[in-house]
Image (tube, rainbow, N blue to C red; front, side, top):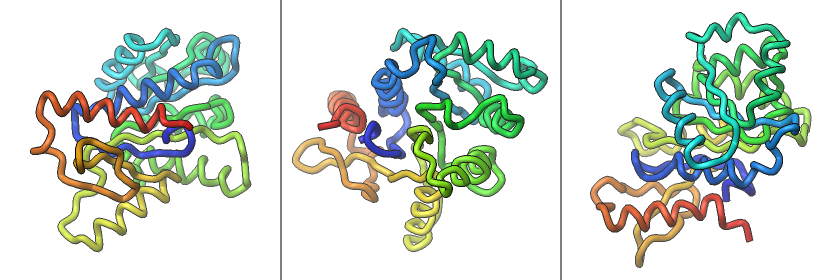
Length: 227
């Protein structure tokens, strides 16, 4: 599913969202391997997650992974430094402001990104850097019928916080529009299976240790079901 179309995986914490993202990266690896000019970008909202997600990608792939955040002085890098980083790394894990600034200054371009993974994508609203990346760059190029836009894979454990059902669905639609993606999750019905888009059951009390393993295996349908 995530190979064929832009996807948001709504799965509870610890259920394997990062594993799905890593499998997606592995499926795109042949397009990323150097000397390819293309990269994958893995966005995370906090600096601590840069290290965490980068280590996970390193552990489960053979891709060259770079870590980027403001404390490294990235804001002061010139085009030559960025060219060097892109030349030696196949996956760049970074906070969203880094990508936003890179796009704004022309150091980075969406056309060079084959996969854009957005962790905790429910933050993509208002003036959050996730939202600005989408509205100021992605959607502008989408409206011009560009065909070289990156595949988007969003991850969230809590897409919407609201007490109103009507408001819930409105916010879901807003998130899907912002991300140009469809939200998918899993449900329990005669065993584990993939749910249709817009199905959001409560998962927290249903999936204990033996079932959780089955749950993660089912989630892999997002990536490997490409027939």
